[in-house]
Length: 189
Image: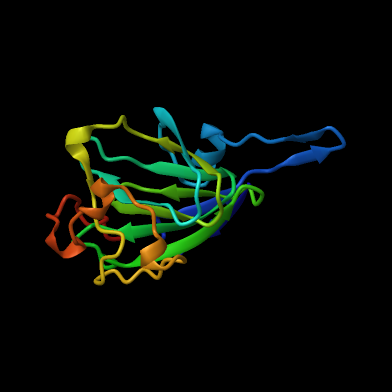
């Protein structure tokens, strides 16, 4: 497995091996043992799948709060996404910072997003399909988020605002500056 660091030590991109021959390919896309070897010892409890039929569909920026906070692993099955993580741990030295990644169905990369980070995505192609694993079950009462176009975060989405497709729920999310401190800062090293 290839592991790539990001600007956040807790967020990782990894790429499982893909064994290709004349018949097609085989890949072990999830292995608890392989993830534990790179420092991700999370027990995932649910797989989710999302499909977006048009380019410019934005989902997020979402997170769940304790006791239902979630680690996530996101991968694209078909199509491509502009994937964003935002540190929402108010006492963290990187609070409010974001990093964006482009993930394609063909690049076989997966993004690990730990508790304390909001996650959002924008489809770069029509008919994009993603899967993601989560470490806790969905809880409507603990489902939170921040606005996709929050000027305090400053994400430059790859689609003009007037072309974005977004749910009314996501459009109404609060600004980062107005959310409570849901998470503690990471332990000092």
